[in-house]
Image (tube, rainbow, N blue to C red; front, top):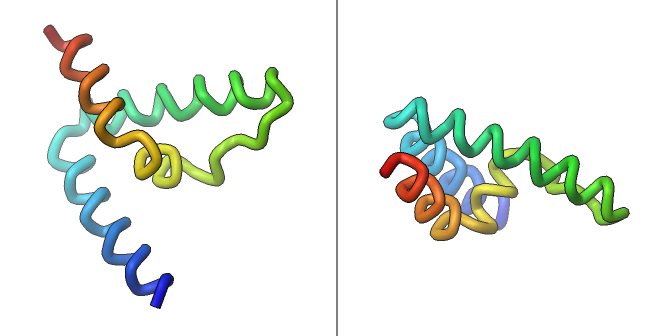
Length: 69
């Protein structure tokens, strides 16, 4: 059940990210920065960009909108 749910969730997130390549690049950049920050702090980084995005979607969208003006 979980695999099916996560697959559907990933497919929906992927469509959303592909609709705006600049947003996808922003998420990738934020994920890389977060990974470095977590490693520096001795914390476990997110498994991948999808896990990072699904954990903070609202916050990431808000920050992206502010940066775009």
